[in-house]
Image 1: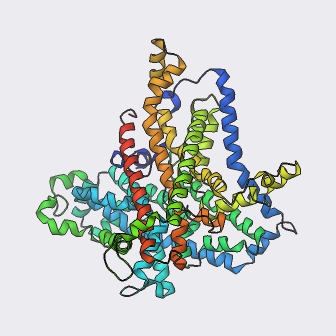
Image 2: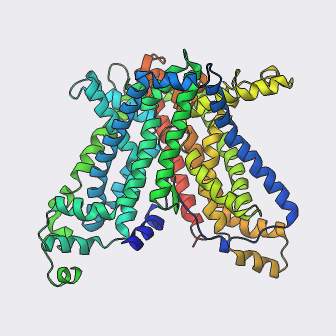
Image 3: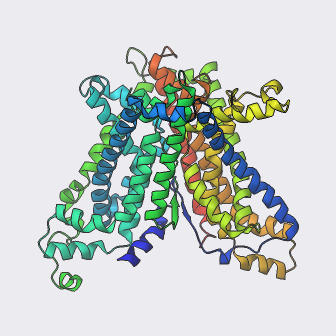
Length: 297
Length: 298
């Protein structure tokens, strides 16, 4: 089982040759081109140091700015006393969890069914799961608001309806990497035999998906879940236009009155992204980074 | 367990799908209903709206109105920013990935940079814009260090809250994305190719011009196209950095959504469809180049 899980995290899927997502496989360095002569090493050091400075300075700047508030650490203690901070973070967290559950509930049976019974439907399912790359969040939310802010389905009339719409939009955003993760996972296991075995033991479809397929996919699903959480917590565009009390809109508005607190919340936001990505690295044994180009930009 | 199942096939799982056409499609209905409701219908709504005038008659006027100075300018600025950051991020990302993979730097730099790039490519939106405001904004820490040295960038024409500033900020998610995409391709440059070229008397520059360059070119161009799309659809970062006062397509759509700034709903829809059209072209071009580059990456 562990060998299977490991192979599941490194196997790239050739069927996804044309997707907006690429896999970074940390291949062994042995086949890499020979290191160039030493006079170039100096140049590569400069390139590397410039890049690292560019990456690090804005992070340092944010931390330093948040520490300018007096007394020391006041920005951090005052956000801890701000109920809106916890409310917005909690809201985004719950929205993220519901998004993950819905996304898994939708993608696992779909990818399973395509692989087992409907290979013919693969091109169309893949096409649909890739659409979020062509339809960016701003266009998606424009379409959703235009469609659902009036009868027959006036989602935006109520808070719960708007939140539902937000979750649905995030599920759409998760399509490309979720479908891909599940499909890659399914490819490495013999789902036909697993299906036949569990059916001959009397399991129904629900039990088959929940007790047989899902446990075999847990590495792929956990990575997808943490990525979803990172994206949802940082997402601004859709949450803002649906007027939801989410974390990113809260962070965005904080600055007009509380610049130091805003810096402190930005640091918290960085930390959350780091934690989510670190968890992906841990569950995936660091064997690969998943790249996504839909999301929070 | 598996053997038993093979000798005694059960119903359903082994029956060919074609014989139960209706039932096999039924398994995909939740997915298709969801996608139709929350992806296809909203998109179709924009398509139809873009083809109608304010009283509901069919027209192409909205698309010809895209040539109005404001909307045309928004497209041109969006394209320019995406192009500049895609090329700059692409070139520097390639150099940086090459530096840690084949540049003779200590090996642990490579895994460090890859891990960081995985995280940094997900730093975007509001926190990213803020990080730059706190660093080289008017009151940023780097700005105050530089102005103590008598080099205040704002005295020399620099302004973070402009197109150039936005490009500098977008570079932050473009660069790591390029590093992540290009690293496997650099790995794929086989040692034997360099040795073979050297054996036949090729110089370093000949190797790059005739072997490594042509092999890497589709991947590099394809990656830059992906970066282009990545920047083109960005809204939150630009909104936070400029307060919504930069005329790019995503900001204009957002302003239209909150206050009908174009004074024409149909034009707003056409504006969104123009974005979808450009992004569709980038995706098609990317898939084409991706397929080409895979010939060598085996």
